[in-house]
Structures are given as structure tokens and as C-alpha cells.
Amino acid sequence: LPEQEAFDIEYWLLEEAKLQRMPKPKSLAGRIAVVTGGAGGIGSATAARLLSEGACVVLADIDETALASAADNLAGRHGKDVVRTVQMNVTDEAAVIDAYAEIAVEFGGIDIVVSNAGIASSAPVEETSLELWNRNLAILSTGYFLVAREAFKVLRQQAIGGSVIFIASKNGLAASPNASAYCTAKASEIHLARCLALEGADAGIRVNVVNPDAVLRGSKIWSGEWLDQRASTYKTDKEGLEEMYRQRSMLKRSVLPEDVAEATYFFASEASSKSTGNIINVDAGNVQAFTR
Ligand code: NAD
Image (tube, rainbow, N blue to C red; front, side, top):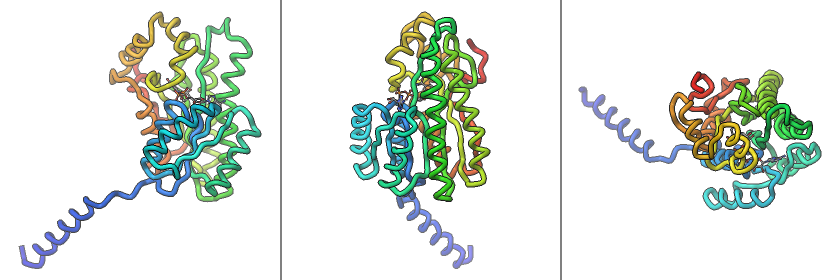
């Protein structure tokens, strides 16, 4: 090589080596994210992922005790200044409005909203009381609507775009036995997301969906009534259920809260800037597999 060219190559290799040593800028630095159901398994894992990319996170949840403990845990790892909590019942319109007002005062804005607060409760249709049906729709369908509606108000006013992510469920796409109330509510979340994607597009507000398959580890849902119902429907226990879900997926792997958090992070970040109204199924291939 001519002397100058050899010098240039050496120079750029050295520069490259220096860049490799430098810490990468965090992709969500300066962003404010709200995570509903933030005290739960998927919510806490999602908050941790967003925090690891430099976002400030507001955990919103109905359960004050769980909220304090989740926030302590995250603050211990990421710092007190970047973790906040707000008590919010997503079915209570006034509480949702107040929570956003509180967040606006504290942080001055919002960039990312992860609507995730939820329950799982169902029964065979003949045993589904109106109360059970309404509870599913109130928390899942209406709760997601209220959280998104208030987010839209803030995001439109800010006029800098934003990302809203719905944690729905594989059960919103595919039927699950003895779970019509839950499945119907989850299906409505998915369609609401599509409608809002269309409405928000002109303001750069993206709305996307993450559909987890069963996440047994870390989730509070899988320690109560839902566990009993699934165990009785499939005539097995918690370990048996986990194995069943694993075996009927293409990849033969269990879905963890961190897997759901990773897909959610993708929709929160600029890497998904051309995606709206879309779905990622975090299901190890279960939705598309005909293995029952
Ligand atoms: P989780 O029970 O661990 O967390 C849910 C959180 O939502 C809890 O902290 C709870 O206090 C909160 N919450 C419940 N009702 C609320 C209300 N009215 N207002 C505010 N907060 C409320 O459950 P998870 O597994 O982390 O579930 C999170 C979301 O993921 C839910 O929407 C659930 O339907 C969905 N999902 C879970 C699974 C799974 O197998 N775990 C699978 C698919 C979808």
C-alpha cells in the first residue's frame, strides 16, 4: 500500500477501537414511560428493560403495596430518580385522568405508554356470570381504552409523536377453552390498538400490540384463580401446564416476562419507527402451530 493509505487505515482502525471502548448512548435516554400494571410480572420486567435503555419509568398499579416493592427493587438497580409510582385503577376514569395530571407535573410529559394492567379470570360460558364478564371487559377492554385515551390527549398536545403499546394476549387471536370473557376482552384490545394506530398516525403516535402466550413464571395471575381454572380445564398442575405450553409451541420453549419486555422495548424504541397497528406474538411459535 502507498504510505499515506497505510497510515489512513491504521488511523481509522485506532479510531474504531476507541469507539468500541466508549459506552453506547442509551436508546431511550430522556424518554418518559408509563407502565400500567407495573407492579406485576410482565410490567416490572418491562419497566426494567426500559430503564436499562435510559428511560424514566412511572409504574402505575392498583396495588399500592406491590407498587412500593416493585419500585424499590427497580430503584435499587437503576437509581431512585428514574423510578416513580402512581396508584391507578385503570377502570376508574377520574383516577386515570388524575394520574396523567400527576405525571405531567412530575415529569412534564410522556413519550411511551405500556398498557399492561390486567387480570385473567374466566369460566365455561354457562357459568360466566354477568359480573365476571363485565369485570374482564372493565379492566381489560375499558381500562386499555381509558389509559390510551388519556395518553393520546397528552401526546397530541406535546406534538412530538409517541409510542403506545398494548400487552394483549395470544388469547385475543385464538380461542382458549373456558375463557370466553378473557379472550373476548383481549381481542377487543387488539382491535382498539388498530383503530388508534390509524387515528394517531397523523400525529406520529404509534400504537402496537405485544401478545404473550402463557407466562407462568413471575406472573401473579398464575398463582390465583386463573391457575385453578386452567389446571382444572387441562387436568394438570402448574408444572404440567408450563410443560404443556412449552410442548405445543414450535420452539418448545417457555415464554418469560423478559421475552415480553424485549418485544415491548422494540415497539417503544426508534427501531420500530415504521411500525404501527402491528402485533408481535411472543409465543415461541404457538399461535401458528397446529399442535394441540
Ligand atoms: P400480574 O398479575 O403479575 O400483573 C398484573 C398487574 O396488573 C398487577 O400488579 C395488578 O395489581 C395490576 N392490576 C390489576 N387490575 C388493575 C386495575 N384495575 N388497575 C390497575 N392495575 C391493575 O400479571 P402479568 O402476567 O404480568 O400480566 C400483565 C398483562 O399481560 C395482563 O394484561 C395479562 O392479561 C397479560 N398477559 C399475561 C399472560 C400470562 O400468562 N402471564 C399471558 C398473556 C397476556
